[in-house]
Length: 208
Image 1 (tube, rainbow, N blue to C red):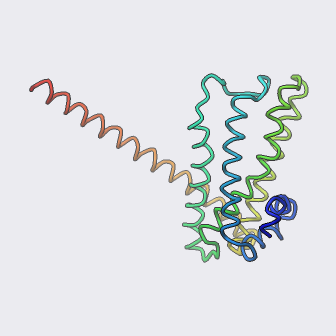
Image 2: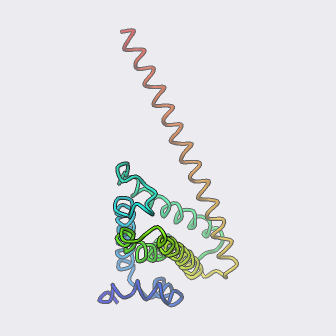
């Protein structure tokens, strides 16, 4: 299977039930992790290039204000939050998926976002305002394809029923929101502590 590394991801997104089953039970863990990190890297690259070079008709970002570090975080943090929240919940719900399996299935589900959005980075510079509908339709199709693959992957990894998978996904989204709130609260607290220490330091320096 390692010799066909470039074929398996495409086969998985076309035949997700068989592909995710192979991903969980039949493939080498190092092989799937390597491809998973590659998919994340490609999605980061797609986001960065899209923000910078997408046609002005459909580009909602100002290329002069684009921050590559933030584009990386926009990909890494949601994936990390999803995997942690999903693993935490499914552990309590008798899910069979391990953290690595959740991570790899999530990364493979991201493939349609790359395959559809990357060509549109360049095609968007050639379309007119009337043709922008094709761009938005393609992005919507990529998002729906991703959601479908994420659903099938989650169901296969944990060996859940469709209804239980749907409930787990909704709970995972709620948990992600809670995690985001806790992180924002933590960083806000750290910022206040740093500001307080800075004020105390300045007071001491002025008195000395």
